[in-house]
Length: 314
Image 1 (cartoon, helix red, strand yellow):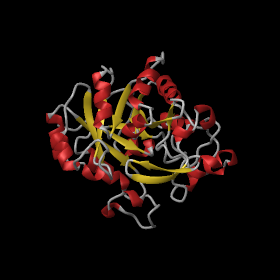
Image 2: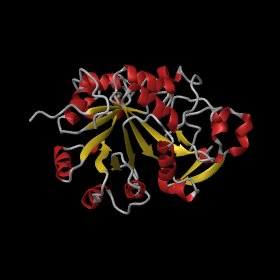
Image 3: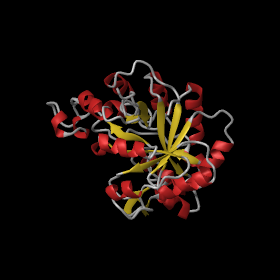
Image 4: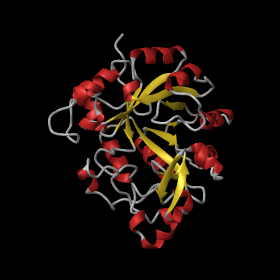
């Protein structure tokens, strides 16, 4: 049987072209025919869910250049790593709303850096509005959920509140590396699919095992719809094992630059040049995966032979 073409999920918007998690990146993803947009959320001091990849803000905003916030710089533990910078939980949303977004990979993607400073930060409510208006799915990743809960900012509860107060919702999927956060949502009868992220560079803080053990011990609970793994871990056998448990498999992240591809798919010209990405992505899709996260939604759609987006399918 020919595999169904996977969902093309715009990774933090069309982040290969614009600074990630910006309104411009979201709008471009919609224009490029993405089936869904993925966002990461962290919490502000006053409990607003902010669309950012990490609680530390200096890598993707102009906070380091703002003299009025210089005293907020600190060193904190983030799931076993000591990070120095400015952290979302030390700012109210009103303060965060004054910051502007920057390209996270400026040396690799100078074209994206040309848009630095044009867009401000967004809340989850903004991402919900964009995807609802476009009639596409929103995939929400809860970042460092246990850490946030320890700070008195439980992401699962904040998410439930945000969803409850939103009138026009898009189709929603929630994902996390932390099974505890997903189980909490399932126990609260959260009426949207849940996806467990597996195989990160570090084991999730609420896990005590590696990737192979995670697969063996993967808990099946009501609401768990799938797993999402790094591209090097994608195998037909993995997809089949997941399917036997009633789970889809997604993969992250499709990026066309040489430095993100296996060596056999590199082209001449250095780490920032586009390699033979289409061949690699088609190989991944042939395993039967249900969805791919892509920085360049247009390239992913073209490579995977997608004529039309499928909207809110999941």
